[in-house]
Length: 490
Image (cartoon, rainbow, N blue to C red; front, side, top):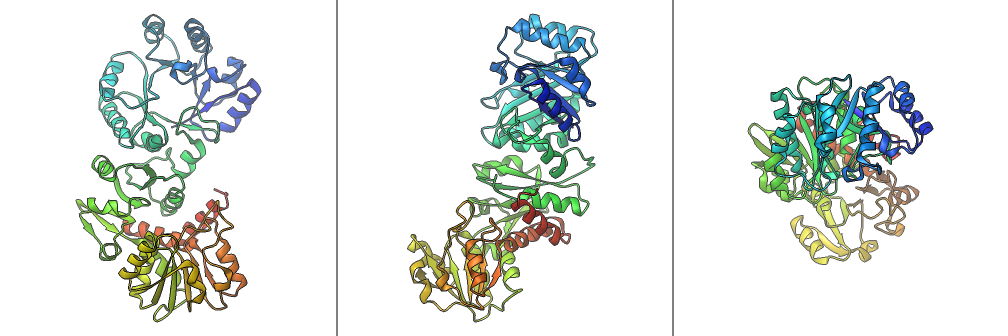
Protein backbone atom coordinates (compact mmCIF):
# COMPACT_ATOMS: atom_id res chain seq x y z
CA UNK A 1 0.00 0.00 0.00
CA UNK A 2 1.01 3.61 -0.61
CA UNK A 3 0.44 6.21 2.08
CA UNK A 4 0.51 9.84 0.95
CA UNK A 5 1.12 12.48 3.64
CA UNK A 6 -1.11 15.57 3.61
CA UNK A 7 0.97 18.49 4.84
CA UNK A 8 -1.26 21.57 4.60
CA UNK A 9 -0.28 24.17 5.61
CA UNK A 10 -3.86 25.50 5.50
CA UNK A 11 -7.23 23.76 5.75
CA UNK A 12 -8.07 24.80 2.19
CA UNK A 13 -4.78 23.45 0.82
CA UNK A 14 -5.13 20.23 2.82
CA UNK A 15 -8.58 19.62 1.33
CA UNK A 16 -7.21 20.25 -2.18
CA UNK A 17 -4.35 17.82 -1.56
CA UNK A 18 -6.67 15.15 -0.19
CA UNK A 19 -8.68 15.30 -3.41
CA UNK A 20 -5.50 15.14 -5.51
CA UNK A 21 -4.08 12.22 -3.49
CA UNK A 22 -7.19 10.03 -3.61
CA UNK A 23 -6.40 8.36 -7.00
CA UNK A 24 -2.84 7.51 -5.89
CA UNK A 25 -3.19 6.63 -2.22
CA UNK A 26 -4.37 3.56 -0.37
CA UNK A 27 -4.02 5.45 2.92
CA UNK A 28 -3.56 9.14 3.74
CA UNK A 29 -1.49 10.57 6.58
CA UNK A 30 -2.74 13.82 8.11
CA UNK A 31 0.37 15.57 9.44
CA UNK A 32 -1.23 17.89 12.00
CA UNK A 33 2.16 19.23 13.06
CA UNK A 34 2.68 20.63 9.54
CA UNK A 35 -0.73 22.35 9.37
CA UNK A 36 -1.14 25.92 10.61
CA UNK A 37 -4.93 25.56 10.75
CA UNK A 38 -7.24 22.60 10.29
CA UNK A 39 -10.63 21.13 11.07
CA UNK A 40 -9.90 17.48 11.83
CA UNK A 41 -13.52 16.37 11.42
CA UNK A 42 -13.68 18.02 7.99
CA UNK A 43 -10.37 16.49 6.86
CA UNK A 44 -11.39 12.98 7.90
CA UNK A 45 -14.79 13.40 6.24
CA UNK A 46 -13.20 14.65 3.01
CA UNK A 47 -11.26 11.43 2.42
CA UNK A 48 -12.72 8.18 1.13
CA UNK A 49 -9.45 6.48 2.12
CA UNK A 50 -8.37 5.44 5.64
CA UNK A 51 -6.34 8.11 7.43
CA UNK A 52 -3.38 8.02 9.78
CA UNK A 53 -3.30 11.00 12.14
CA UNK A 54 0.23 12.04 13.09
CA UNK A 55 1.40 14.90 15.32
CA UNK A 56 5.17 14.77 15.45
CA UNK A 57 7.57 16.82 17.56
CA UNK A 58 10.71 18.50 16.24
CA UNK A 59 12.76 15.85 18.02
CA UNK A 60 10.99 13.23 15.89
CA UNK A 61 11.36 15.13 12.61
CA UNK A 62 8.11 17.09 12.88
CA UNK A 63 7.12 20.68 13.68
CA UNK A 64 4.76 20.52 16.69
CA UNK A 65 6.03 23.01 19.26
CA UNK A 66 3.43 22.72 22.04
CA UNK A 67 3.63 20.65 25.20
CA UNK A 68 3.55 16.87 25.19
CA UNK A 69 0.14 16.95 26.87
CA UNK A 70 -1.21 19.19 24.09
CA UNK A 71 0.27 16.96 21.40
CA UNK A 72 -1.17 13.79 22.91
CA UNK A 73 -4.49 15.53 23.47
CA UNK A 74 -4.82 16.11 19.72
CA UNK A 75 -4.16 12.42 19.03
CA UNK A 76 -6.83 11.50 21.59
CA UNK A 77 -9.19 13.87 19.81
CA UNK A 78 -8.44 12.10 16.53
CA UNK A 79 -9.35 8.77 18.13
CA UNK A 80 -12.56 10.25 19.49
CA UNK A 81 -13.71 11.42 16.03
CA UNK A 82 -12.97 8.05 14.42
CA UNK A 83 -9.56 8.24 12.73
CA UNK A 84 -8.66 4.78 11.41
CA UNK A 85 -5.02 5.00 12.56
CA UNK A 86 -3.03 6.98 15.12
CA UNK A 87 0.78 7.19 14.89
CA UNK A 88 2.47 7.60 18.26
CA UNK A 89 6.21 7.43 18.95
CA UNK A 90 8.05 5.01 21.23
CA UNK A 91 9.78 8.07 22.69
CA UNK A 92 6.46 9.18 24.22
CA UNK A 93 6.56 8.93 28.01
CA UNK A 94 5.15 5.71 29.44
CA UNK A 95 2.43 7.61 31.26
CA UNK A 96 1.14 9.27 28.06
CA UNK A 97 1.70 6.22 25.85
CA UNK A 98 -0.08 3.68 28.04
CA UNK A 99 -3.69 4.79 27.31
CA UNK A 100 -3.13 4.35 23.57
CA UNK A 101 -1.77 0.82 23.92
CA UNK A 102 -4.15 -0.49 26.55
CA UNK A 103 -7.47 1.30 26.02
CA UNK A 104 -10.35 -0.21 24.07
CA UNK A 105 -10.73 2.02 21.04
CA UNK A 106 -11.73 1.82 17.39
CA UNK A 107 -8.57 3.45 16.02
CA UNK A 108 -5.59 1.22 15.26
CA UNK A 109 -2.32 2.31 16.85
CA UNK A 110 0.93 2.57 14.89
CA UNK A 111 3.83 2.51 17.34
CA UNK A 112 6.74 4.26 15.63
CA UNK A 113 10.50 4.65 16.04
CA UNK A 114 12.54 7.14 13.99
CA UNK A 115 16.29 7.59 13.79
CA UNK A 116 17.36 10.50 11.57
CA UNK A 117 21.07 9.85 12.10
CA UNK A 118 21.83 6.23 11.21
CA UNK A 119 20.66 2.62 11.39
CA UNK A 120 21.74 1.34 14.80
CA UNK A 121 23.21 -2.13 15.18
CA UNK A 122 20.71 -2.93 17.96
CA UNK A 123 17.72 -2.44 15.61
CA UNK A 124 16.77 -6.12 16.00
CA UNK A 125 16.60 -5.75 19.79
CA UNK A 126 14.47 -2.63 19.39
CA UNK A 127 12.07 -4.59 17.18
CA UNK A 128 11.76 -7.26 19.88
CA UNK A 129 10.97 -4.65 22.54
CA UNK A 130 8.33 -3.08 20.30
CA UNK A 131 6.81 -6.49 19.58
CA UNK A 132 6.21 -6.88 23.31
CA UNK A 133 4.01 -3.76 23.30
CA UNK A 134 0.33 -4.16 22.32
CA UNK A 135 0.30 -1.97 19.21
CA UNK A 136 -1.59 -2.90 16.04
CA UNK A 137 1.25 -1.94 13.70
CA UNK A 138 4.96 -1.33 14.30
CA UNK A 139 6.89 1.30 12.38
CA UNK A 140 10.70 1.42 12.32
CA UNK A 141 12.34 4.11 10.18
CA UNK A 142 16.09 4.75 10.21
CA UNK A 143 18.61 6.72 8.15
CA UNK A 144 20.79 4.86 5.62
CA UNK A 145 24.42 5.99 5.67
CA UNK A 146 25.31 3.10 3.36
CA UNK A 147 23.09 1.16 0.99
CA UNK A 148 23.70 -1.98 3.06
CA UNK A 149 21.84 -0.38 6.00
CA UNK A 150 18.65 -1.28 4.11
CA UNK A 151 19.43 -4.94 4.68
CA UNK A 152 18.76 -4.60 8.41
CA UNK A 153 15.24 -3.34 7.64
CA UNK A 154 14.70 -6.13 5.09
CA UNK A 155 15.65 -8.63 7.79
CA UNK A 156 13.05 -7.10 10.13
CA UNK A 157 10.40 -7.50 7.43
CA UNK A 158 11.39 -11.15 7.10
CA UNK A 159 11.09 -11.60 10.87
CA UNK A 160 7.76 -9.79 11.04
CA UNK A 161 6.19 -12.21 8.56
CA UNK A 162 7.30 -15.14 10.71
CA UNK A 163 6.02 -13.34 13.83
CA UNK A 164 2.72 -12.43 12.13
CA UNK A 165 3.34 -8.76 12.94
CA UNK A 166 2.33 -5.83 10.75
CA UNK A 167 5.47 -3.76 10.19
CA UNK A 168 6.40 -0.58 8.34
CA UNK A 169 10.19 -0.69 7.86
CA UNK A 170 11.99 1.94 5.79
CA UNK A 171 15.30 3.75 5.47
CA UNK A 172 15.50 7.50 4.90
CA UNK A 173 17.96 9.36 2.72
CA UNK A 174 18.99 8.85 -0.91
CA UNK A 175 20.68 5.56 0.00
CA UNK A 176 17.41 4.42 1.59
CA UNK A 177 15.21 4.99 -1.47
CA UNK A 178 15.46 1.33 -2.43
CA UNK A 179 13.69 0.34 0.81
CA UNK A 180 10.78 2.66 0.00
CA UNK A 181 10.31 0.77 -3.26
CA UNK A 182 10.95 -2.79 -2.11
CA UNK A 183 9.47 -2.72 1.40
CA UNK A 184 5.84 -3.34 0.36
CA UNK A 185 7.00 -6.10 -2.00
CA UNK A 186 8.91 -7.77 0.85
CA UNK A 187 5.92 -7.79 3.18
CA UNK A 188 5.87 -4.26 4.62
CA UNK A 189 2.46 -2.92 5.66
CA UNK A 190 2.89 0.22 3.55
CA UNK A 191 5.35 2.68 2.09
CA UNK A 192 5.16 6.47 2.05
CA UNK A 193 5.09 8.51 -1.15
CA UNK A 194 4.82 12.28 -1.44
CA UNK A 195 1.96 13.88 -3.34
CA UNK A 196 4.48 15.83 -5.42
CA UNK A 197 8.11 16.86 -5.46
CA UNK A 198 8.53 19.43 -2.70
CA UNK A 199 5.89 17.84 -0.45
CA UNK A 200 8.18 15.21 1.07
CA UNK A 201 7.88 14.62 4.82
CA UNK A 202 11.18 12.72 5.15
CA UNK A 203 14.52 12.56 3.30
CA UNK A 204 14.49 10.28 0.25
CA UNK A 205 10.71 10.11 -0.08
CA UNK A 206 9.63 9.27 -3.64
CA UNK A 207 6.43 10.58 -5.21
CA UNK A 208 3.37 8.38 -4.94
CA UNK A 209 2.91 8.55 -8.72
CA UNK A 210 6.36 7.04 -9.35
CA UNK A 211 5.79 4.32 -6.75
CA UNK A 212 2.40 3.44 -8.22
CA UNK A 213 2.86 3.89 -11.97
CA UNK A 214 6.55 3.14 -12.58
CA UNK A 215 7.56 0.74 -9.78
CA UNK A 216 4.01 -0.69 -9.51
CA UNK A 217 4.50 -1.37 -5.80
CA UNK A 218 0.77 -2.01 -5.34
CA UNK A 219 0.54 -4.70 -8.05
CA UNK A 220 -0.06 -8.23 -6.85
CA UNK A 221 3.09 -10.28 -7.37
CA UNK A 222 3.19 -13.98 -6.55
CA UNK A 223 6.87 -13.94 -7.49
CA UNK A 224 9.28 -11.45 -8.96
CA UNK A 225 12.96 -10.79 -9.62
CA UNK A 226 14.83 -7.64 -8.68
CA UNK A 227 17.13 -5.89 -11.14
CA UNK A 228 18.77 -2.50 -10.79
CA UNK A 229 21.52 -0.05 -11.55
CA UNK A 230 24.57 0.42 -9.36
CA UNK A 231 26.55 3.61 -9.57
CA UNK A 232 27.43 6.83 -7.81
CA UNK A 233 25.52 8.95 -8.58
CA UNK A 234 22.44 7.11 -9.88
CA UNK A 235 19.83 9.88 -9.79
CA UNK A 236 20.52 10.82 -13.43
CA UNK A 237 19.99 7.27 -14.69
CA UNK A 238 16.89 6.64 -16.79
CA UNK A 239 17.19 2.89 -16.32
CA UNK A 240 14.29 2.77 -13.86
CA UNK A 241 12.00 4.27 -16.51
CA UNK A 242 13.07 2.17 -19.46
CA UNK A 243 13.33 -1.25 -17.76
CA UNK A 244 10.22 -1.01 -15.60
CA UNK A 245 8.27 0.02 -18.68
CA UNK A 246 9.73 -2.95 -20.57
CA UNK A 247 8.78 -5.34 -17.75
CA UNK A 248 5.24 -4.00 -17.72
CA UNK A 249 4.94 -4.19 -21.52
CA UNK A 250 6.01 -7.85 -21.55
CA UNK A 251 3.69 -8.80 -18.68
CA UNK A 252 6.55 -9.38 -16.25
CA UNK A 253 6.24 -8.85 -12.49
CA UNK A 254 9.97 -8.06 -12.21
CA UNK A 255 11.20 -4.70 -10.95
CA UNK A 256 14.22 -2.46 -11.55
CA UNK A 257 15.53 -0.15 -8.80
CA UNK A 258 18.44 2.26 -8.16
CA UNK A 259 21.31 1.22 -5.89
CA UNK A 260 23.48 4.14 -4.76
CA UNK A 261 26.70 2.32 -3.91
CA UNK A 262 29.95 3.38 -2.24
CA UNK A 263 31.77 0.04 -2.23
CA UNK A 264 31.03 -2.64 -4.84
CA UNK A 265 32.37 -5.62 -2.89
CA UNK A 266 30.47 -4.66 0.27
CA UNK A 267 27.28 -4.15 -1.74
CA UNK A 268 27.65 -7.47 -3.55
CA UNK A 269 28.29 -9.39 -0.36
CA UNK A 270 25.12 -8.07 1.27
CA UNK A 271 22.66 -7.71 -1.61
CA UNK A 272 23.48 -10.77 -3.75
CA UNK A 273 20.55 -12.80 -2.36
CA UNK A 274 18.12 -10.09 -3.45
CA UNK A 275 18.88 -9.28 -7.09
CA UNK A 276 19.22 -11.30 -10.32
CA UNK A 277 20.92 -8.77 -12.57
CA UNK A 278 22.42 -5.30 -12.70
CA UNK A 279 23.20 -2.40 -14.94
CA UNK A 280 26.57 -0.93 -14.00
CA UNK A 281 27.34 2.73 -14.48
CA UNK A 282 30.19 5.01 -13.45
CA UNK A 283 32.43 4.66 -11.56
CA UNK A 284 32.08 0.88 -11.17
CA UNK A 285 32.41 -0.63 -14.67
CA UNK A 286 35.93 -1.81 -13.89
CA UNK A 287 35.53 -2.37 -10.12
CA UNK A 288 32.65 -4.77 -10.68
CA UNK A 289 34.89 -7.19 -12.58
CA UNK A 290 36.64 -8.44 -9.43
CA UNK A 291 33.39 -9.88 -8.04
CA UNK A 292 32.38 -11.68 -11.24
CA UNK A 293 32.67 -15.46 -11.49
CA UNK A 294 32.93 -15.18 -15.28
CA UNK A 295 33.39 -12.35 -17.77
CA UNK A 296 32.22 -12.57 -21.37
CA UNK A 297 35.03 -12.22 -23.91
CA UNK A 298 34.10 -8.78 -25.30
CA UNK A 299 33.81 -7.27 -21.81
CA UNK A 300 37.11 -8.89 -20.87
CA UNK A 301 38.90 -7.32 -23.84
CA UNK A 302 37.33 -3.91 -23.20
CA UNK A 303 38.14 -4.16 -19.52
CA UNK A 304 34.70 -2.95 -18.44
CA UNK A 305 31.38 -4.55 -17.48
CA UNK A 306 28.08 -2.69 -17.74
CA UNK A 307 25.75 -5.68 -17.30
CA UNK A 308 25.66 -8.39 -14.63
CA UNK A 309 23.60 -11.56 -14.93
CA UNK A 310 22.99 -14.31 -12.40
CA UNK A 311 24.32 -17.35 -14.27
CA UNK A 312 23.38 -20.50 -12.39
CA UNK A 313 24.91 -20.05 -8.95
CA UNK A 314 27.46 -17.46 -10.10
CA UNK A 315 27.66 -14.04 -11.74
CA UNK A 316 28.64 -13.24 -15.32
CA UNK A 317 29.68 -9.83 -16.63
CA UNK A 318 28.91 -8.45 -20.10
CA UNK A 319 29.39 -5.19 -21.99
CA UNK A 320 26.36 -4.11 -24.04
CA UNK A 321 27.74 -0.61 -24.70
CA UNK A 322 29.90 -2.03 -27.48
CA UNK A 323 27.05 -3.99 -29.05
CA UNK A 324 24.69 -1.03 -28.72
CA UNK A 325 27.03 1.34 -30.53
CA UNK A 326 27.77 -1.08 -33.38
CA UNK A 327 24.06 -1.76 -33.86
CA UNK A 328 23.40 1.98 -34.20
CA UNK A 329 26.36 2.58 -36.55
CA UNK A 330 25.88 -0.39 -38.85
CA UNK A 331 22.38 0.73 -39.77
CA UNK A 332 24.09 3.54 -41.66
CA UNK A 333 27.63 2.51 -42.57
CA UNK A 334 29.90 -0.47 -43.23
CA UNK A 335 32.80 0.28 -40.91
CA UNK A 336 35.40 -1.83 -42.70
CA UNK A 337 38.29 0.40 -43.88
CA UNK A 338 36.42 3.57 -42.92
CA UNK A 339 38.30 6.45 -41.29
CA UNK A 340 36.76 6.71 -37.83
CA UNK A 341 37.52 9.58 -35.46
CA UNK A 342 36.75 8.91 -31.79
CA UNK A 343 36.53 11.99 -29.58
CA UNK A 344 37.39 11.15 -26.00
CA UNK A 345 39.49 8.47 -24.33
CA UNK A 346 37.36 7.29 -21.41
CA UNK A 347 35.29 4.17 -20.80
CA UNK A 348 32.72 4.87 -23.53
CA UNK A 349 35.49 5.52 -26.05
CA UNK A 350 37.17 2.27 -25.08
CA UNK A 351 33.98 0.20 -25.45
CA UNK A 352 32.97 1.72 -28.77
CA UNK A 353 36.56 1.87 -30.04
CA UNK A 354 37.05 -1.83 -29.43
CA UNK A 355 33.91 -2.67 -31.41
CA UNK A 356 34.86 -0.38 -34.29
CA UNK A 357 38.37 -1.86 -34.35
CA UNK A 358 36.94 -5.39 -34.54
CA UNK A 359 34.94 -4.30 -37.60
CA UNK A 360 38.13 -3.31 -39.44
CA UNK A 361 37.96 0.47 -39.28
CA UNK A 362 40.99 2.77 -39.38
CA UNK A 363 40.76 4.68 -36.10
CA UNK A 364 42.04 8.01 -34.86
CA UNK A 365 41.62 8.84 -31.17
CA UNK A 366 41.65 12.38 -29.82
CA UNK A 367 42.61 13.61 -26.39
CA UNK A 368 42.04 17.02 -24.83
CA UNK A 369 44.00 17.47 -21.59
CA UNK A 370 45.08 13.91 -20.79
CA UNK A 371 47.52 12.92 -23.53
CA UNK A 372 48.65 9.82 -21.64
CA UNK A 373 45.10 8.49 -21.50
CA UNK A 374 44.67 9.04 -25.23
CA UNK A 375 47.96 7.29 -26.01
CA UNK A 376 46.99 4.33 -23.83
CA UNK A 377 43.63 3.91 -25.61
CA UNK A 378 45.29 4.34 -29.01
CA UNK A 379 47.74 1.55 -28.16
CA UNK A 380 44.92 -0.79 -27.10
CA UNK A 381 42.86 -0.38 -30.28
CA UNK A 382 45.80 0.25 -32.65
CA UNK A 383 44.70 3.81 -33.37
CA UNK A 384 46.45 7.01 -34.38
CA UNK A 385 46.39 9.57 -31.55
CA UNK A 386 46.00 13.34 -32.04
CA UNK A 387 45.04 16.27 -29.85
CA UNK A 388 41.54 17.74 -30.21
CA UNK A 389 43.09 20.87 -31.75
CA UNK A 390 44.39 18.81 -34.71
CA UNK A 391 41.09 17.17 -35.63
CA UNK A 392 40.33 19.40 -38.62
CA UNK A 393 43.45 18.04 -40.38
CA UNK A 394 42.12 14.45 -40.31
CA UNK A 395 40.26 12.64 -43.07
CA UNK A 396 37.02 11.49 -41.45
CA UNK A 397 34.26 9.19 -42.68
CA UNK A 398 32.71 8.56 -39.27
CA UNK A 399 32.94 10.86 -36.25
CA UNK A 400 31.96 9.43 -32.84
CA UNK A 401 31.76 11.68 -29.80
CA UNK A 402 32.49 9.61 -26.69
CA UNK A 403 33.12 12.61 -24.45
CA UNK A 404 30.51 14.27 -22.21
CA UNK A 405 30.87 17.58 -24.08
CA UNK A 406 27.42 18.92 -24.97
CA UNK A 407 25.62 17.03 -22.22
CA UNK A 408 22.89 18.84 -20.27
CA UNK A 409 23.17 21.41 -18.77
CA UNK A 410 26.09 22.47 -21.02
CA UNK A 411 24.00 22.14 -24.15
CA UNK A 412 25.74 24.86 -26.15
CA UNK A 413 29.13 23.15 -25.99
CA UNK A 414 30.37 20.93 -28.82
CA UNK A 415 33.38 18.58 -28.94
CA UNK A 416 34.56 19.65 -32.42
CA UNK A 417 34.28 22.71 -34.59
CA UNK A 418 31.65 22.73 -37.32
CA UNK A 419 34.56 23.16 -39.75
CA UNK A 420 35.28 19.45 -39.29
CA UNK A 421 31.83 18.40 -40.51
CA UNK A 422 31.35 17.55 -44.18
CA UNK A 423 28.43 16.35 -46.26
CA UNK A 424 28.03 12.56 -46.23
CA UNK A 425 30.01 12.06 -43.01
CA UNK A 426 28.36 9.88 -40.36
CA UNK A 427 28.23 11.69 -37.00
CA UNK A 428 27.35 9.71 -33.89
CA UNK A 429 27.03 11.45 -30.51
CA UNK A 430 27.00 9.16 -27.48
CA UNK A 431 25.43 11.99 -25.42
CA UNK A 432 21.66 11.41 -25.21
CA UNK A 433 20.62 14.32 -22.99
CA UNK A 434 19.65 16.50 -24.78
CA UNK A 435 18.25 14.30 -27.55
CA UNK A 436 19.65 16.67 -30.17
CA UNK A 437 23.02 18.04 -29.10
CA UNK A 438 24.72 21.01 -30.69
CA UNK A 439 27.03 18.57 -32.50
CA UNK A 440 24.05 16.76 -34.05
CA UNK A 441 22.35 20.05 -35.00
CA UNK A 442 25.46 21.35 -36.74
CA UNK A 443 26.05 17.97 -38.42
CA UNK A 444 22.55 18.05 -39.90
CA UNK A 445 23.17 21.55 -41.28
CA UNK A 446 26.41 20.28 -42.86
CA UNK A 447 24.56 17.43 -44.57
CA UNK A 448 25.93 14.63 -42.39
CA UNK A 449 24.14 11.39 -41.52
CA UNK A 450 23.42 11.76 -37.80
CA UNK A 451 22.90 9.21 -35.01
CA UNK A 452 21.56 10.37 -31.64
CA UNK A 453 22.92 9.04 -28.37
CA UNK A 454 19.39 7.81 -27.66
CA UNK A 455 20.11 4.93 -30.03
CA UNK A 456 23.16 3.86 -28.02
CA UNK A 457 21.27 4.14 -24.75
CA UNK A 458 18.29 2.17 -26.01
CA UNK A 459 20.40 -0.50 -27.72
CA UNK A 460 22.55 -1.16 -24.66
CA UNK A 461 19.39 -1.35 -22.50
CA UNK A 462 17.79 -3.76 -24.99
CA UNK A 463 20.88 -5.95 -24.72
CA UNK A 464 20.63 -5.92 -20.92
CA UNK A 465 16.94 -6.77 -20.90
CA UNK A 466 17.45 -9.72 -23.25
CA UNK A 467 20.41 -11.05 -21.24
CA UNK A 468 18.38 -10.89 -18.01
CA UNK A 469 15.11 -12.30 -19.29
CA UNK A 470 15.91 -14.41 -22.35
CA UNK A 471 13.02 -12.58 -24.07
CA UNK A 472 12.92 -10.19 -27.00
CA UNK A 473 12.87 -6.63 -25.69
CA UNK A 474 10.09 -4.18 -26.67
CA UNK A 475 12.59 -1.87 -28.39
CA UNK A 476 10.12 0.70 -29.74
CA UNK A 477 8.44 1.07 -26.35
CA UNK A 478 11.83 1.47 -24.67
CA UNK A 479 12.89 4.14 -27.15
CA UNK A 480 9.61 5.99 -26.69
CA UNK A 481 9.94 6.06 -22.90
CA UNK A 482 13.48 7.48 -23.18
CA UNK A 483 12.36 10.24 -25.54
CA UNK A 484 9.34 11.09 -23.38
CA UNK A 485 11.54 11.05 -20.27
CA UNK A 486 14.03 13.43 -21.83
CA UNK A 487 11.16 15.67 -22.94
CA UNK A 488 9.85 15.73 -19.36
CA UNK A 489 6.64 13.87 -20.28
CA UNK A 490 7.13 10.95 -17.86
